[in-house]
Image (tube, rainbow, N blue to C red; front, side):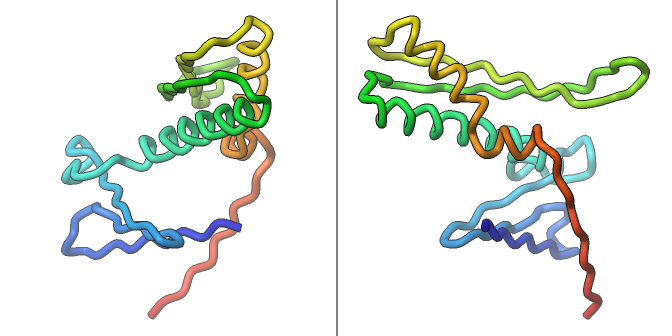
Length: 135
């Protein structure tokens, strides 16, 4: 189970301080939305999570198989699309890999990219529960 805490203070504008187990980082709204653009915005963090998870999953798989995967670069883009009158998000992953790999190994890496946990989380059924406490 992953736990992340986000703290926002009115005197910080829309900048959010985020902590996880042993790490701290930030998020902020872009200037277009009244933020300071001092850190990645939430969409960028989500896309970064998908890209990082994809690369890690591919690296782990290649290592376990003993394949010569020397680099993985993932670029994720999100845009709004309309399909049958309904708007949805389309996320496109562009994956560049390097190494001495066969066509069969490259196909295996393409398949395993879709098995990264964040990909599964984004694609699969999900539930979000909200609890609010007033202090």
